[in-house]
Length: 490
Image: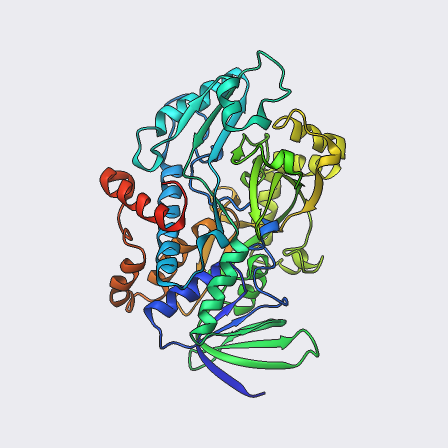
């Protein structure tokens, strides 16, 4: 087989590969880049707009980032997520200003982020959360309401038809976003291709193996015709979503040993009814059910996809052994290795509440699903909403000295000791924080080059290395500047 050589190979056509490729082209424009995607287009799995809720996660409304407690609430996680979101916003704004990204309305719309709770204890918790956040620079402008009248001004669907005298409360942050990560991914790749990157669609990566000279041999095969060939690369990034675990296992790097994956599927109710859509301009997050994973926090979202507004409610979690929507039922058993069986069994032992929750979700009737929607939209009617299948997510399972294994929500980057290959495992809030994740990857994988790259990176992301939440004036100026460029509230 003829072999072509590249400086960088990106496996997977999603937002992570797109972001990394965009960064590399700006700090090292002379490097050659090859991208492989098994499907017929980019952004067709997790980055597809109908496979996620499009929330530009920034800690404004996600209650699981600051769980209730008897003592003072800890704002460190929402602050951290918001700091990450600001880096993403700055990078996107830089690319818009340079013409590398199109008009931001193609991939980004304003959608205030709200939290909504019911019940006296939850109202008290949300009030304490608001008091904790309201004076922090990154949460400037957050509002609190515990009257139906005020909440109805923000989101009428939450209140219409609701029983009187019910304890309710909400917070609202005008700076929230609705992001079409599919459109953003496509735009990022189009710019890279215009500057020399090579994209191969309908091409499956079947193996990744280190050669004796230190380069990586990447074996690929055309989906149509099954024609095999191979390329070599000095650096490989595996950003294949749920498919990343299998590919990293095939590299035999010691860093992947002990890792497993727990797949979770999901569905959403969707409506495009103009009368309903016109009444809801926000993204509203509630509290997760007992035992539910963080990605299953119920939320009612305003979406704009390809110019068409709609509402989503969900997700309704379920289980499938597939690691991707376009994959095989054998994904889970094929991921089993001697080193990860014990961690996976330990997770099964310690997460009975999660298993019970998923079984309940799988057995839920449409009537039960509708009742969950009616907790947010009391007047919701079944005929106005269709059930759509969302993307597959694979939660990280890793070794734990005390318990044997741990189920980890969020994302994790696996990097070889020499930095020549890396991959991303996990799920939400990955897409929203793709920029800081990839910036950290550059620093980890290219420690000798990063100091030379840093000035250029700070041109693209001006507050890189800063803590905005500790600098009110800088935070205000930065958020105002990016908001103006991205055409959203600060």
